Length: 325
Image (cartoon, rainbow, N blue to C red; front, top):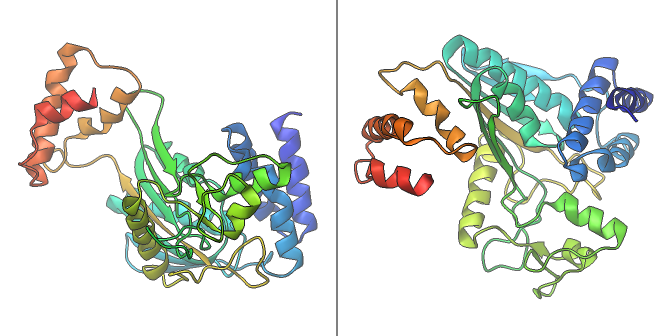
């Protein structure tokens, strides 16, 4: 089936569940995108969940999104318990607009819901020639390092930037060893999950997805992953005035709004060369195509100037570059 036809079907389903045509289109596009980029755990498999939550009045299909202007660069979005796609769409568009005006756009979101892939929103900013960071918290699923009780969500971290080629650099990763959507899919399909990603409720390693959902997921890199999860919870929950510290409700089982919160930062790339060399933006290209020796000297110079700007004089630019290539 062509994606355009599938999009129309999904849009009609959301309209049936009382979303406006514009909001239904936003949701359909986000779900289709997840399928197209190879992330089905955030795609059509979630459709029934969203519709069920609308039926239970956990999601407000007629949400009135409120955008409060804090400054020329900063805004606060109240999602009015909307489906997450809609609040996030408003947030990223506001952040992009602010960034184009002042050089940076910072938007905080509260009273929202699950919004799919963070990378989907980062890509929208990158296509406008902007750098972007996106953070969101989630219902408790990950235990702090060494603990048995979940406190943090899988709390994804996302960063995107244009590069020197047509291929952008976008990193979208949860702080858990595996995202929760994949565990839910495995539970439905009766397949096992990889070893080392979750513990059962007794604290024993498990490859059974149902036992994993009853227990806890493990963070990446041990205590470092726990630290990153906490950081995202602060940025997404405390900073936005939304739920945090384990208070975000489980979207799959709760009958209450779960108030996922987000923080979106968009930075314009046309920076003052006296502050940051514009060519530093091409650095991620090295991960796609190995640069030739003639260009290496230029990149060392850019790294050296950046190190000086940010007071990172303990780092040797030549050594740093050699490790990256």
